[in-house]
Length: 72
Image (cartoon, rainbow, N blue to C red; front, side):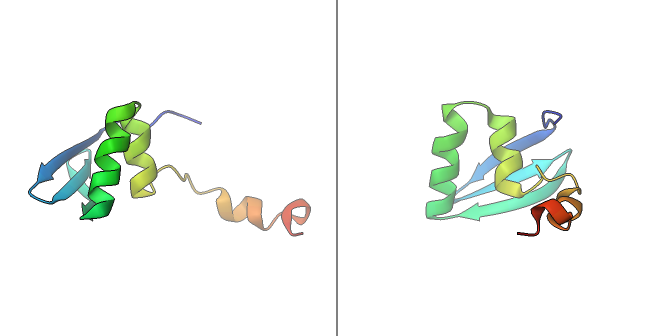
């Protein structure tokens, strides 16, 4: 899986705006913003931002879920 890149974040008062390549990818407010800031400062900020915005999925999840081996 390729490592994500191009994410930035900006703290604006009590909310955090996450952008990906200049476009807004998510806004976090209140307690979620605090959790995000604590996690992003602990290390691996690009991967953390990708996970929080949901951009870590690359489209093959539906195919894998419907595979006969994974149906349960």
